[in-house]
View 1 (cartoon, rainbow, N blue to C red):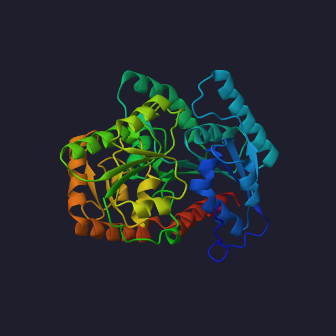
View 2 (cartoon, rainbow, N blue to C red):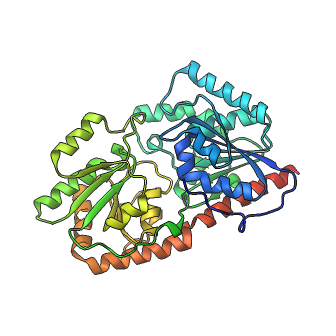
View 3 (cartoon, helix red, strand yellow):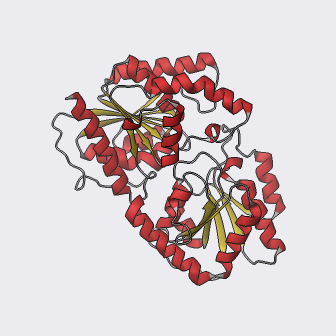
Length: 395
């Protein structure tokens, strides 16, 4: 795991170390999406503790080697057992009492709900709640989703009700949903566009010769548009378009829309797409691809896959959907298509395949967008400013 030196950028001389606790569902998510923030906080004089519910594909020793203390609490992303959820709440409360954090940073749904509730009970001085997309529950209009939202309404109100709190959203749509739902005061909202990207990791901007490669890289969820991607690939094959289609990512069995092992095997056997599984080296992966495609209708923040596509100078085809549309400049760095529309998706991909000069120009525009909006230093700076804003209210 790469350690980035932020000390020359973010040294604020806070004096006595201020205790920052970062609570995440998954330790691997911390390393992939929040590590630079923690590193910058240390450089700025904070004492940083990482609290996680699941390991993902990493070990706690990896975090300790990076200089952070890590703690386990029993949070399960897919769990709904009332006794287990109460145990999660109690474990968070006990850890807050043990560590006495000055500010807690709560990332993803269960941490910002449970951590937000407990922060009020434990009288934590400052709370940052990070809404990295609202998930499928706020997109679907079926009766189960409506009922679930109704049950969650008081929990959201309490979790977002701390008197010294900021709620980070990645797109304006999510902010509007939470404010209009009546669970969040608009004065608490801070907009930071995505998780950021280390631009220096992406250096190979020229395309490889040969058959164009279209790459889908994300969690393998139906709501991320996996089957729309496969259907579009099948349509292009029927049209005689020469291209390869890569399906890259982990199966997420704890998500209700995650593909099963049987479904993945069926896609492998079908021969339309190449199922590559999880790939750790995204810069190397995107350097081999010509087009990045994410036809998502999930409740996105801003997908990291699309931010990385911009950094890699690759043209994007994605949906005109909250979070996805914010990752491109339409018709300049990428093309937007309607959700759940494989034919429109195929049309957009075909256009880019058949117009390589325009594709390259879109990739260059995407790189400029990444440099302007998504650089990790900008996102890190935004987080540290939020920490300072809250702590100044306590002092």
